[in-house]
Image (tube, rainbow, N blue to C red; front, side, top):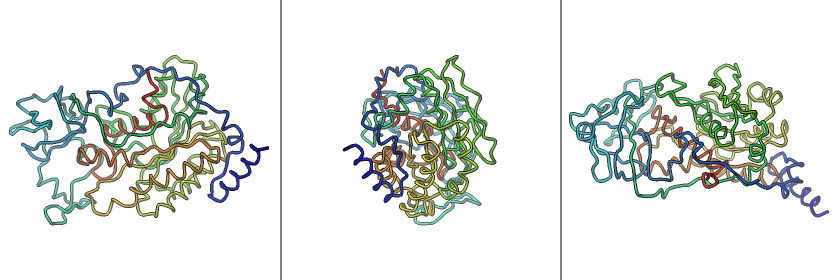
Length: 420
């Protein structure tokens, strides 16, 4: 009787908050526990080794404007192991091209390390982004494709200090229905629906240049496959402007993760609502959905956070109605370039409303967690400049920051602390 009364109360609360409850989920919530995880960290690809733990960082990107410039990285450098071009084709020489000084990396005079120069960076014709530089509003350098990464280099180094910035909370207990399916070896479907970042914009594999790193959604899904011994079947949606997918990932397993990503660059939550019946509904009808990640936000910077949240819930409620047992992930977007005039809006406030939204879903019996990339990117900006880790200098990650996206997502869903 008490359980029934609890369900009735939660249904009323859910209706008042605009959330469609999962009645079956409510009834079973107290009985759902995370099974024992038996996964090994060593099974992860090196791109998914947690950058915020350990003492070595591989291929952290940095961009020099001028020769002689000294740059901070995420950690204070103890020893530089290598510096290479972004595509990995060129290896630079310590003492000739760069030096270590006071925990920073310095681009030496006469270096062959690419430097864009202040003149080019702060005087970009036909730019879509401006900046206040030396008391003047000037057009700032930007670009898609390799416009930014041609000027970035990879630094691999050791450090002895620890990360004191934001750390993503592990939500494995919350997402136990999905994780338990992986532990049992059941086939599962994961879907990602969002904007250009979730599409994979500026990932080198999408651009078609070396090192051909996959978008963060693929990195995350591959990590699940590696940890739990799965193949991945990538669904080509054949939808206009939707994300492309790689070939299937075949490990010879009898278990399969079906991957679906109908994300489109430039879309906002309103586009997500308008196109749901074409871009999401048919795929859930055909393949089901065990884990659904909603990745809008960057293009909703002009919306009030509450309006943004209402739009997100419209999409999520549609998913829940189609597949009541689904587990939800809400991606709080990285913040755009804080120096760019006109681009930095309400994105910074979205994470807070997503957390509140997630709490309400969980109370209604729908497993839901938030991936805090807003908080993560703000912490990174305390150590690095935006141009060091962006793919377009406005609002896209490069390969390095896509790795961070994937790692923070994996920390949310599985938790590095749960890996042996």
